[in-house]
Length: 161
Length: 153
Image (cartoon, rainbow over all chains, first blue to last red):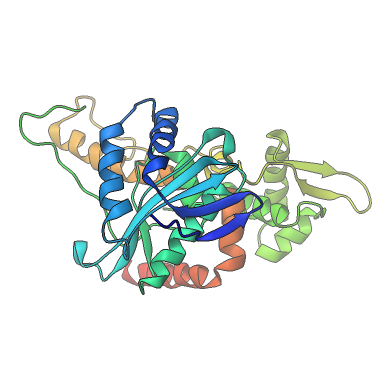
């Protein structure tokens, strides 16, 4: 498969679409951050975002010195929650030891470029309120609370995880 | 949400000083710019100094200088020096035996608090300065919303 380079972000860092060969590194990075290995989940995400509908689905990695430093996943979606087409970022992650060096910003900028090419002008994301690190990151990129409120309920008979 | 006066003054001062961290500013300059009480601001600056967020230099040409890390210091860090964030429940006159109504109201107030806390904890001084400098339209939007709220209220 051809690997299109989206851009040389900063010295030694390359943003490009994810390849199947990157999956072990992505699974490892996620495990390092969350403490849980989820190979099935990442394999499924790669199948959906790395292989299909690549005109509107984006799964990018930041590669530095032959190593995956981080990744971002998103999609341009339309009319969910009544919203006109907009870009959604589902996940962004940077290797803990590689943080505060602009890797996340480069990934964010790269996926925003991808969204822009699909014609959208709004980018959204959703994350846990107590995930201060990522919340602060998105804030630092200029994101602010949007016009939606997330609501949920527990089904009868359910119990908190 | 309404912040107490001291908290607002602290945020004005921190943001003003952090915008030019190498520059020393007199308390009077900040007070003049925001049209606020110099006496009250001086007290707030002393508190900020004790918290290690500003350095004070005495004498001619003296003033205050930002001493924090703008990428780490959040709005919450500054706010909680001056006031507790979170609703004061139901106005301090809650019944001794909480009823279902009281519990339900607390649940809703807690939801609002959680959002406010997450917002204040996630915005650093550095991010605030970006909003100030790069997004004047956002500030204008905020003013418009505030005016509309005031008209409704």
